[in-house]
Length: 129
Image (cartoon, rainbow, N blue to C red; front, side, top):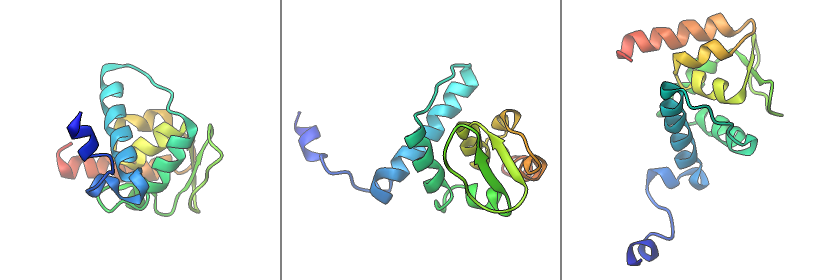
């Protein structure tokens, strides 16, 4: 019980952006595991919006670079980002693909898809993922 009392206030890198970094990191890695073992999960929209916003500012993620020049328009969220060829699909897949997860590309559509595919698969090839 003392360990809980000692850690009531979040600190460290994951506490950044009001806990948004921890939320985004946890959500992405949880979805990595769920997608790999075939267990779907509907992530609440408010969490996806927060994670999408954070991911596009997080220097440790490739989302900002991958999404550059694209219009992100999830079809299940009231959230839009960017200008250019549009990318549509579930918000979870938009988040995952922009974060470099190539398996999420299959859930997306739109004129921006091939641009994102080239960026994500190029990154995966270079990084050994």
